[in-house]
Image (cartoon, rainbow, N blue to C red; front, side, top):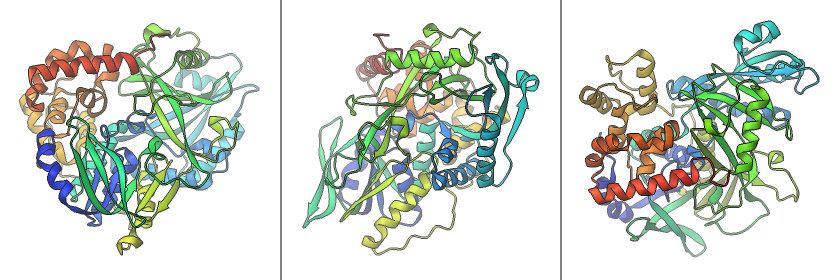
Length: 527
């Protein structure tokens, strides 16, 4: 398996720009990665271009849920829910250790919504779509054992059901790796400046290297845009539907401060919107908000002081005796949902549907909206739209997104750790095993991340900047205090040479990363 790093990128970029492509995908989130993966498996000559870093946008800052969208049933979005449930089950089967089951508890209160019967009815439909019963009601006495610390005033009992959870950025990297295994190529740090058109047809694009400023023209028979909240920038204007950027923000707490065995979903007393508190990567997450995002989309989204208050109030509502406060927050993140809006004035963000749309012009298809869980189905829809112009057919035989990998023994690790690494790294597992022999199985700080994972990412996961390494290849910038600042000297000793950075480059990257973390991943300064 050849290295996929900055040195490779520098050599490959001019050669890749000189090729004629069947399909160029613009956007390196989960939707773009899925399109590349499905095109590559069918033998298309395909390339993905990302302006910042893979999963830099929404796909590293989601709520980490691979779910069927239970609340969409109540909104009448039956097809979206059905497709999501089926894809959730597929991912659980194909990528254990990367996509894992997560139990949810919905507590029911006298006079509250939804009551046990209504919620049980919704779950019966949900389970029918999955093909098995997946929920159970617990009366008050049993619920106390299942969920200690819940608010007990007017508490009747609770319903437990299952969805799934993932590391969204690692999901993107794994899908890209599967695509590359089938001949696809992917580049980050390339901003598309314009689509090139000849006689009214898109024939390629002009892109600029974010660091050097060098410009490259790429030719392609088709272009597929999967740029999320940026979808309106390059396409030709037309139609009344537009992207409505909506911000969802989260707080992350140390796991010991609010230890949970389940996710807890409930309605916020301020406005009645569903929120949740759940375990993730050994920590505890409180989320999420749903607000119009009017900030510059080219800057990392950040949580507001008002959103911090809203999420802390949610936690206090459901766990009143715990006393979670600002001082307990390890980190924050905010993502921008690319919701397709019908443009009706005054519609609340939470009332917008989560359906996707395809916008077409000759030589180009733009995917707008969509859900992480259904990325494979969205990719197939894009390929169906591209296929006639390429003279190809697209059949879906249900082939795996994640192909089974040879078993690689990791005797120094517990079975749960081996499962986790196999799910996250796939084809790269043999090299990771070599690094484990060299570096041992030590974890970084209080996280579940191993030092060997940092070494692997620095060697062959196309890291261009330090935030790529600490916020997306690993999540140490979220999971450790002050963005993992205390670990930076040891990270330097392990990764600097592997990244090929000079001392001056390392020091500049640290300054840049810590400034970014303070600005966008900590509590707001005005809070």
